Image (cartoon, rainbow, N blue to C red; front, side, top):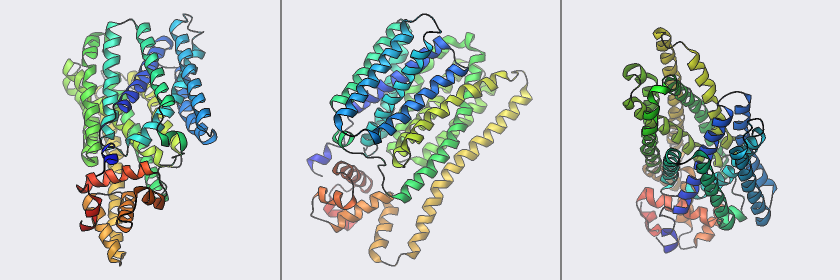
Amino acid sequence: MDSEEKKKLPVNIWLVLLFAAYHLNMVACCIYSDSRLGWEGPLYYLKESALFVGFFCFFVSRRIIKGMLPRRIVLVVATLGYSLGLLGVIFLNDPARIKLPAILAMFFLGYMGGAVYYYLSAGVFGHNFGGLILSIGLAIAVSIFHFSWVFLEKEAVMLVIMLLGAVAMTYIVIRPPRDWVFMDLLPYERDEKIQKENRNDLWGLVVVSIAIVLVLAKSDAIQLQNYAAIAEDVKASRLFAIPAYLLVGFFHDKKKRTVSEIMLLSSMLMLIWIPNNLGVSFAFIALSVFLQNYLVAWIILRFFALAPKTREPELWAGFSRIIMILDPIFGTFFLSLPPEDHNLAYIMGTVLTLIVTISVMLLMMNRYRRRFEEAMSEWDVTDEGEKKLLRIRADYGLTPRETDVFSVVLRMSGQSVSAMADELGISRTMMYRYLNSISEKTGEPDREKWKEL
């Protein structure tokens, strides 16, 4: 493995901090503005929808606005717009006057989020530690928010967090990666068959995410009904989110999709049924925080990984936010149920269990269906070279695109990486990501020895 490839392997600390800064701003801005404007009602949904519109506008504007300087100027304007909107929410005392600044702040926060989303998706998911980059960023954001919210005045916290967001955007504007500035990588994956498979996976992900939000809403409703008694326990248990994030990132990087989905199903079922057995206690709150944040991190990571590899990244990126708006809607429904009606609680738990189980099983079955179809297609292959590629793909778990890269490397042995990238129609940077991934999966860093596999 040459020196340029080795540089791709370590975790880039700037990517971790960038995602931490943005996620910190998103969480803090949502919670702070909600605390001033309310957690439900038309204004709440309008404000949350503005975040989705901001995501959408970034991806659309990226297709329209060409050239490095205009793109940088628009990002600077979005950062300033977010800062001014948030300052209005912080310092205007009249609730009627902070409605427009709050909506504008959320819109520009969504636009900034589109930039971070695009940047990280281009740089993280060809990385050996892409899942940990995001999960460590989430953990840092939660830790900073928790400790600052406890020990500082809320207005001071928001000013510091806003400055961190501005610094993160400045990093993207001043030091953008070459691919992000000069190339339009969307969609990253040009194979139409893979794009279609990713869209199918994303539809399954939408169904599972709605089931997850149902479960989260039920768990939140139990906590809200008893919040006066458990307020201190909730504060003390927030840091249990950190191991949940790290676990999701670990499963992603180790390609443990089945294990991750079994953990997902277990988490959802536990959140449905544990409250009936343990009641509201610190153990329940801590376990709920761990399970809830595992589910949220799983949604974030899966949307980050799949959405850019379709032809409609702006829509799929926004879905991850739109789905979360359902949380208070479902939560209001669960809060309206009489807590003393145990039969109704049992029926609701049973219905939720069925919805959750069917949703996750559909997601898993879709993946295994593709594997079965790929295995059956091997019977139709008569060429010995293609049979060898199919065998290697099955033995080492290569993706279809990685198999194409592997084939080109064997066929163009001795030629430069740039020539191979041109043959595949991808950038040199993307080519190195595929090479690193194949090296990791096969355990063979020397490409000259791949023909012996």
